[in-house]
Image 1: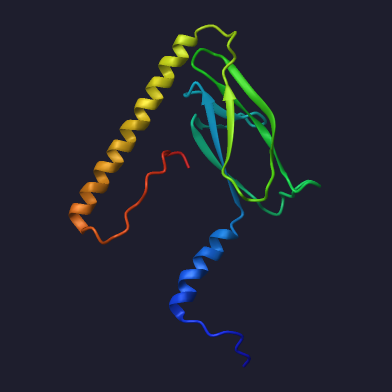
Image 2: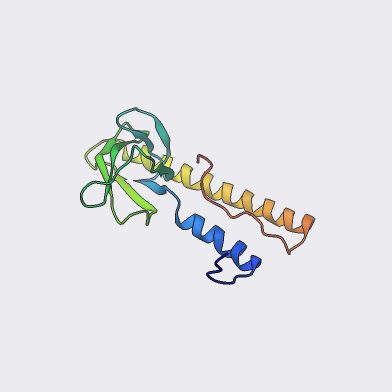
Length: 162
């Protein structure tokens, strides 16, 4: 049997996950609304993706193929604020391979009334996000006390709708 290179099992076990992660067929998208708190949904289906900021993973599969420039074209999204104001992007063009995450920013139209209502909603969304982070950190501390410091603990992702 031809032996191309000698490698220890520990090295293989360390490098293999890194290779697999680098070859994933996913592109993370982060949707941000200004102000925060708009409901983000797909234009074509109307499916809600979440309350901005939120994220979605675009799965590259056999049905997805890049255009002549190597970019993936995704259908657009819409943002709807509590006041009824809306903004949308018709299509998203993702280039540079799988180098994401990509950020998609949707800005509330300034001419729409009830900006104060949307700013209040943004403050509530931000407060909820901060509370979720504090709860996560408290749970992490509780786990450290229970199982000790030598274990890897989860990291905060910032969203619950993945």
